[in-house]
Length: 439
Image (cartoon, rainbow, N blue to C red; front, side, top):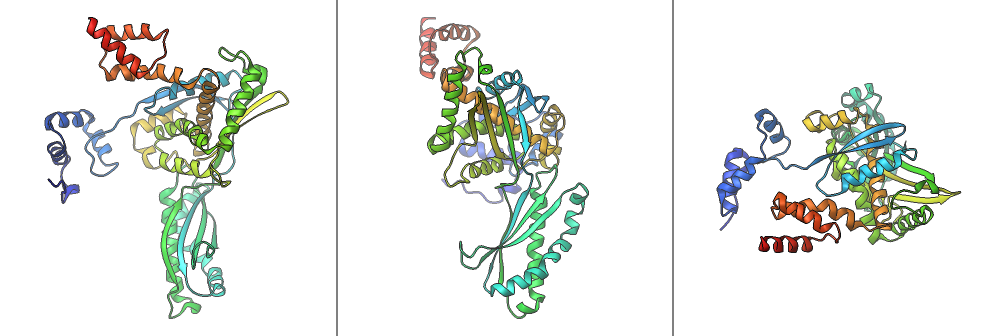
């Protein structure tokens, strides 16, 4: 049976759900009930969500948690985190509390430049193109003035435009490589609008430029921003005397510090470890990016590209011990916004930004990087001491109990059972099975 449909986007939401339920489920009414169960009771709010994307049928919820006690550059923050993975929020909060007693997190904005490119092919002489470029450059600024004027009032706009010869990569390939300051907006729409105007202006002026008369040597391939924002970078770090690292579970601070540094060094040189190491960093970063209505896919892509900037995939974080001081730091590219997009539409995003004391884009960069560093510290602390699974499985236990629909009495029995045993999915399932048989 073919499941191909036509005109699907024009169907009502109810018609789409009915077709899905009848086509893919043995119990269509049950499927419809589950899908509709996640609708907002407030119809206006549901309509708002329906218009975020296309062909909506329901809402897909993630838990929104809170990690308090982040002392960042002398100010305490309570950080909202949207994520489904057990132990991430708890780990972030634990690290925040730990470092709040040791001076807190310090951050530095390395840069805030965004990048966009017009990719084009050119088949004429390089001398002619260079002469055309000198003529074209002021025209690019002039013809984008209607796009940039509001951004310029806020102190942003186009920073620089370069003509780049990329013939060594692809024959006849060139770029207009532009940098932007988009202030508190992420700036994707602004940048792309400027780039598309660049392309239109270049093609129009090429037609009228004397050197190109009667020829069409320029072919625009595409105009698009880059998510690889190598000059939109933030650094977050913590440091303290090695002896101050001592705490429950860290009885030998010197040994702990040395193992932490060794663990980071391994992630710096071993890509198989680095990917998982950086994934842990992104657990923290993505959760805050999602909660604040930003684009976590763009952030992920930039971070992993940045981790490969020296030719080998490596750790985003680093650690050292010098003169008795333990230092742990992270550098990561973060193109974020606190105005525009979902930040002004999604009610929970507004709540999240309010909890963060209405940060600017730069302040949000500092907060997000800090949570990534805190998450990394928590993971490495567990790995180099008691292991990752003990704490993770304790947090994951509720998921296992929910999966088996454990009653309150069964939950109490399982909690007592795991006090003196290693928590695994299989052991909990077996214990519940035996418990139910005996009862």
